[in-house]
Length: 307
Ligand SMILES: Nc1ncnc2c1ncn2[C@@H]1O[C@H](COP(=O)(O)OP(=O)(O)OP(=O)(O)O)[C@@H](O)[C@H]1O
Ligand SMILES: [Mg+2]
Image 1 (cartoon, protein in one colour):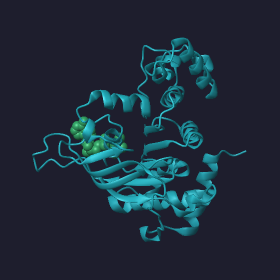
Image 2 (image 1 turned 90 degrees about the vertical axis):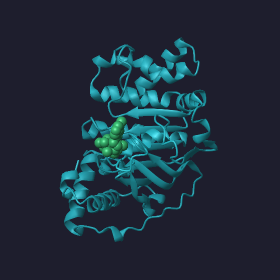
Image 3 (image 1 turned 120 degrees about the vertical axis):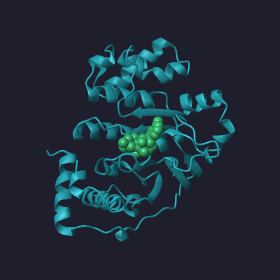
């Protein structure tokens, strides 16, 4: 049987042949959240370097953005467009400018806890989970201890941490690697450990920054599928950064597309509200989003973005 990735690629080729390029005005996108926002951004600005120097452009500048709870939101855009910057300020890994607006997580204003390290740590440690492109596993800890990191921080006894970590590792087929150090794991194995670490402590929000960026297509798809399953089963919020539109499209409810730190497009394909997307629709949506990005950025022929 052909893999889903293979089917997607084949469907994409057929679609491109039949439809030709699609212009952005062919979109019918629904931007109404329908779900309560998990994050609300108001006049958010982030500048690297001095903020009083007019020649320094902010890396991120967002007037208004709501990110729905209980859904998967993909943050898309070419390299340097501000995707990681947005993820970092959302997840409290970094701060907005001194006068750079506010972000609210549920009822919690980030501005009100700007100098409250304890409150920030509580959110980062208890509410949030993280997956990074290069996994950021702790090199001196075993795979099991890495997975159990969040549980240990929450005060779960070590023996119980180890037991639960093994269950998580078994689920992704690497129970036998429980005692291995990250340096003894392959890239795909490390990323599976990183995903399980992000979800083991039952966070409310998982932030994933290019979680499949260093993986081959099929391994990347498996990682995406595990994250998406966590989101569906828990009903919590997944925010995923990617430049690979064709890989995230199938798993995302909403899209936010950035260019030069600003939002050039946000929405959700209307048919996503219906049953599982047909392969052709997935491919068409991915192609349309790719066209928007290409037209706005005036670079890269479409085929160069194919996985
Ligand atoms: N620590 C930093 N110091 C100075 N400039 C930075 C820093 N981090 C990012 N930038 C700049 O901010 C802009 C946005 O960077 P960011 O890392 O958010 O982009 P990105 O969309 O995640 O890119 P990529 O796809 O390559 O990861 C870029 O111009 C980048 O050079
Ligand atoms: Mg980045």
